[in-house]
Image (cartoon, rainbow, N blue to C red; front, side, top):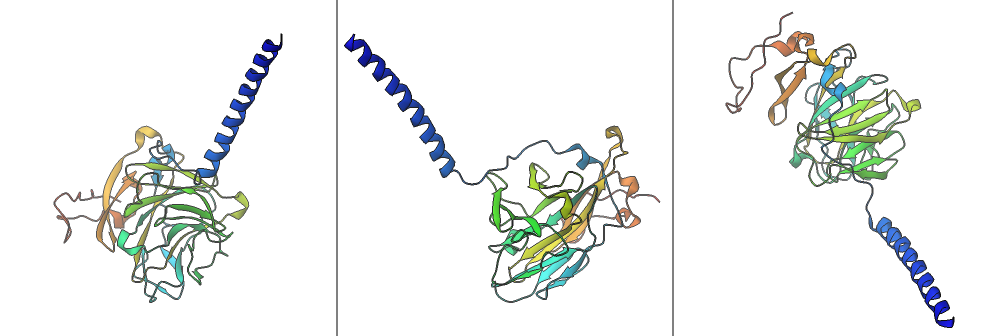
Length: 285
């Protein structure tokens, strides 16, 4: 009987030890993990393929800090010397409802250590000293530090994006005011929309923040969701947009709703472009 009791006790101890081992292993894994990682390659939301231009929101940058000047409506240049303060620029139109897409062209050589893009309320500052990741460094803004691949709010790291790669020169920002989310992606991958923005914080403005001397950043409003468009009626056309690196190709859906400026004819590749340039179709009306 004594041997049987010893065997039972040993079995119980082994079981308890196994449970404790698994518990400790889970704790160690949690401690060793970085912040949550956003997966790439998720299907792009259907609404993105139904966007149409909205002239009321396609207004360009309107607010900048003293260290930034506007080259044109869509492109800003940080002229402040050094990398000790962070300067910012704000889009001119507020976003309070609907779903919207912005194209950002930010060359890797123009980023420095802290280059942020996202959205902020009217109270979000456009300048911080000493340097910081401007968009997302406070409670008034939410953003992505594209140099360090960090999702930020209140100065806290919410996650990383993208996984296993870098943010390319051209990428997209998705602002869903109806769902209260902020996401990012490229022509080839949708990274998701993991940043949640409380509904009470709207309206918000698209923003950028830079501390890289002589950096140039282009932001283009691509359009907003057209809820009345059936998937079978969606068509796309490639048009050029001017960025600091030259012509940037932009795919615009539903070209029949493009403003006249987008329908300008092109006789051939613009200066400096390769023969792979796709000229836009002429849009009537």
